[in-house]
Image 1 (cartoon, rainbow, N blue to C red):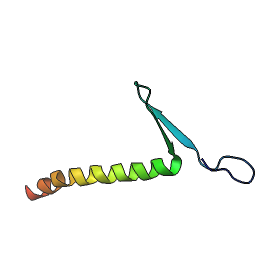
Image 2 (tube, rainbow, N blue to C red):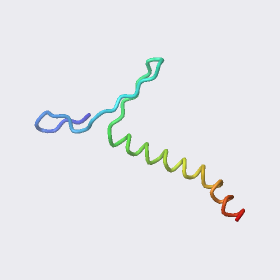
Image 3 (cartoon, rainbow, N blue to C red):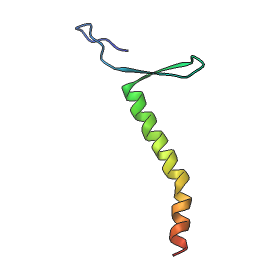
Image 4 (cartoon, rainbow, N blue to C red):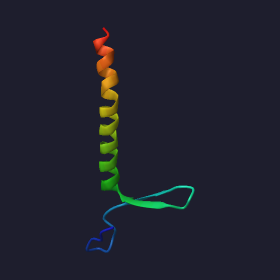
Length: 57
């Protein structure tokens, strides 16, 4: 977390915790990047299904 001149935090931190007590600290910028990456992965994985659907028409 970075601090500005006014000693106020610049980034918000998102904490993800599982049942085993593992914690993951991500800034808001990192979570936005991760969400775009995961969205891209889902699109790439579903692309063959979409292509096959159009090939059957």
